[in-house]
Image 1 (cartoon, helix red, strand yellow):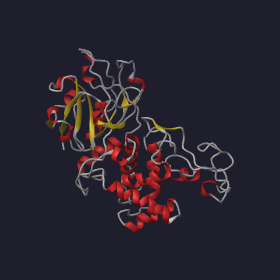
Image 2: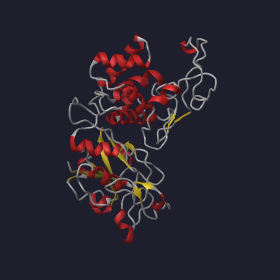
Image 3: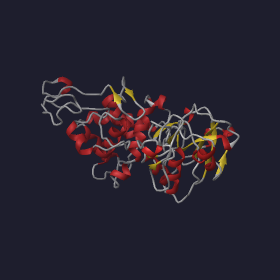
Image 4: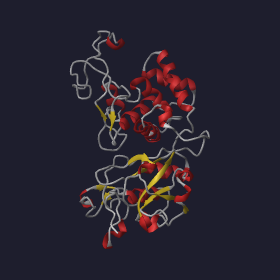
Length: 372
């Protein structure tokens, strides 16, 4: 039976059955298994943070070990504390699946007129590329970087090949790098205060940011990437955010071209990327575990978590499955990696890059599997 209304890694008949997996899989926050306080998962609504912005903060914090290996204590709450003050988490804007924010967020013109509290003129440094002003600077994006500063610290947080302060993932990753400096220990309150002070040289600003951080700290466990094999799997998957979907693409060595053709006509031979089971295969290979190629076959590996038990039993690093008949593994059409706190990371479908989504984005949850 061909159920092609749900695109993604799809089960095809006969020759292409070996490349099964469909549907959109959701991003999962990387819940920490070590050093984190116990408690409920992160409630974005209770925190007053849009889900897509929270995902950006989680991603930015998780990438810091790559950009500033000596930094300690970077976590999503710190990034959220800054963004709350700078843009109220991109309030009033639309944040696309890939993280782009529209309309762009730009601050007052820094022409020394006093608008926005600025009394020192700062001449343009980016030709108006990011702030739309070719004469004077304006702070840009949800973290309100000056263009010159963003050029120095900007990172491609979603791996789409572009670095843009108006992209939530790029801005969060860049803010994390800026706050970490050359390797601060942000678990030390004085070093954290000093880091925030470099962002805005006002101690009142520092206190305002810290009050937000403290509030977010009360919301539950700190979603840091776990250590050990679970951390290796999650970090490998998170690092692929923004990589395009390729029908049949991905292997133990990384992204690759795929095959032809997906139900909506994508020729994977023309796209270098991952499909859903290709991404999980690659991520688990980084922990020394070789998975079968298809989503349905991957359901037969590890300790099966029945769909009837609900997603509450999932732990970070578990495989998450979706199937037309949750009690029959042969109908599984999609797989992702659980990050924790109701989120997962996956390669959704043609036209959608690797990203983080909520686990409940698909209606046909088919349980999980624990390999670590």
